[in-house]
Length: 111
Length: 115
Image (cartoon, rainbow over all chains, first blue to last red; front, top):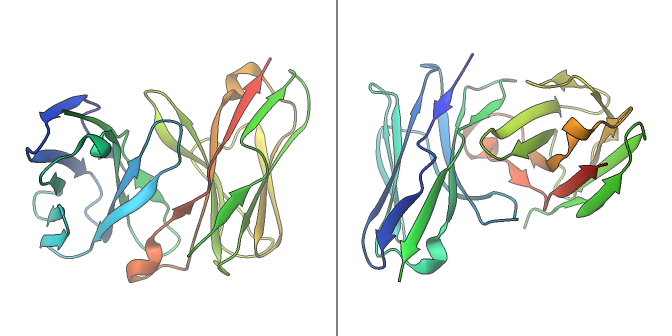
């Protein structure tokens, strides 16, 4: 059973701080990794994807991938109250394999 | 922009009823998915389809069936609704595997309540 594990939180950070969200995955064959943001009552929306080891930056968001440690993280700099949401980590193993989602980490940014 | 639409945002049905949930995508995606999302359990895959008339079971297919007669439309059917099928149902679509095309795009969701 392929698994993606996340701490459900909530993770509380003050406004302006860096929020660090973490995820581990069990399938060493996973090729692609995604971070989705989900506001309460809404559907998930993609915010970052990463395929290679290292960092990938997009605005205030940085995704980090370490395949040797089977670890993915998402950093949110200058956190805003509007970043308060649940962040889902997902891993994809290629071909007709399904995407496996983590349970999600709830982030609360305190003004 | 990719657009995935679902037939209803909220639905209330009675135990034993046959329920149809429809999903339509407008980006010519080959792959379509049905998930349910429950508190503490995350997103769980019910069925997916990688082509017209093709379907594959996901993690929790029991009590559900699907239909994909046209590329843009993927239907989820609850043959005889039960209270434990009360949930948020999410449809998603994606292009075939490979690089950025693995990204799944989600519809707005249907919150189904079975009484």
